[in-house]
Image (tube, rainbow, N blue to C red; front, top):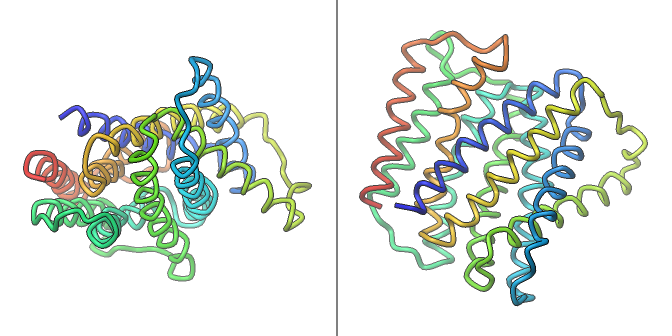
Length: 284
């Protein structure tokens, strides 16, 4: 159960990081938020490597690097923009479909078995996430912006598959998380330069502490995520990690003044998420 516990740690830290980033982005654009968040996360993970490097595997580093480009560059950029345009709760609900994508990809490309509890648990988690975001009996979002969280969901799913391939060759969670984040940061800076966006980066001193804090918390999440994936099946661990909207609802009420009121949909969604996590953890 150690892997499952680490996945829960990653889930909580992901939720906390998302809420902190959302609070900061009230006066900050997504590009700036992503640069500060990813930069601070990379710095923290790099400092942790002073303990020494393990024996390197170039192919393992390659998979970690591609995973980082998918997640900390493209996936995170789409997700941060969706937080700003749609809201953290609704965006999290759509991004939360990622466990289903991971389960399918793991079965197709990693040879993981098609275990009914994993699929059922992932479905419960997704249904719970959707219920949490029901407003007035309907699931409401800006249709024109739905591609943002959907794209993020697909990219995070692909990155977890690639991260699992990396841990199979290079089972060092800190190095894996650091190299993934570094690759994402380099790709993002290159993107900003190629699109002439570097000059538009404006740091809001009032919000930078929230973004730096978000990056530090996300560094912990990535270490826990990478280690949990190395210890168990990627479909199981991802299903647990993507229960983070349950934590997001609670943390949003603590940090965001405009969070939703507690409703019957929120309670029902929370129950489904917990059931999904238990099902995956005990029977997956």
